[in-house]
Length: 394
Ligand code: NAD
Ligand code: MG
Image 1 (cartoon, protein in one colour):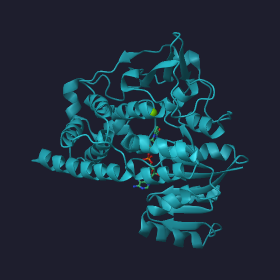
Image 2: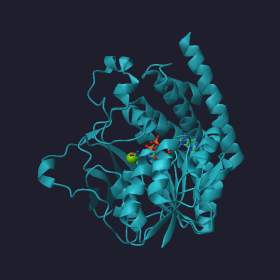
Image 3: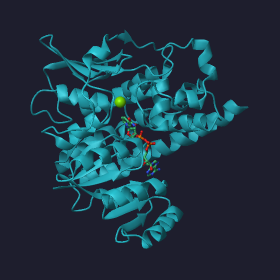
Image 4: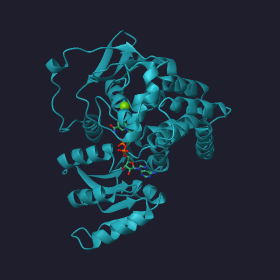
């Protein structure tokens, strides 16, 4: 029996993880769940999965939650609050696997704590890896933690890697990664119409049902930019070895091109329970609850190059990783602020790349050699992005 901690249990990935865990409750025991503030959903989850301990980051909500538990059959669940508590539950002795599914930079410290504690990390939180790159991978290597990618593309690539492959290794026989992208909801929208895109339109993804932030990232294709950087870090490849391929049907979840001309692809229905189940069963496989792929329904698969004029965020991501050092951290932080401002209707859809690019221009590249440097760059980039948002409003 393995102990499971889900960081971000109330999100889209968290919910799918609990669905998979419930199918295999003889293999996985849910030990800890965390939520930022959605205590209604967390309560439902506690009734079903009965964890030992939960974290509600928001202190007032945590108190409300604790009171709510008192009159119930699950009053023995321990309730913690505050961001430090996320690190506490991610490193508990009886936790073997940590699903890192908090969105954004907020997930970095607990994910890193799990890495340092040598846990098996199921990594959905790509922003944490993008902002901390080599430091994260070093923590994994030093503690002997196991790092399994949950992002569907990276999970696909991992599955297409040679036998015995571990995250961070260089697979010399693999010469290229073909990173697939659906192209999001605006793949074919006339360019001049992008300026009027609303948050509701941007979060309505054609193929995947996801949280709001990653849905906007998919619409700008910053998601693919972050994933390109994520792939460089996880698979020890250079940016020019990662080819982004628009594949609107989302049947192939990515491919690995080998030196002998072989291309291996992983396919399946677009449902995150597949990569989640793969990582939870690894190195075995078990049922994910996902319907078998009906290849006759697929009928055709299309592939196109990504248009960098339509998707400037993708260009900025290549620029950030090629510059190196703190630039991916700056890119990520500025993007988080820009997306939040867009969702709050403070800026337009087409302002997102402008905010990121102008933020990046305010920084000189320096090595991201310590956690302190990374956290400072993240902090400063947020300030820079907020200033640019104010300028844009005038
Ligand atoms: P979501 O918005 O649905 O859920 C986010 C979760 O993080 C929630 O449980 C929320 O309570 C928690 N959270 C948010 N802010 C927090 C904070 N400041 N402190 C602590 N907890 C906080 O997001 P999601 O779609 O589940 O995505 C989660 C992560 O997985 C993201 O990094 C995303 O890029 C990645 N991912 C998601 C998908 C998908 O299909 N949803 C696919 C690939 C990768
Ligand atoms: Mg993905």
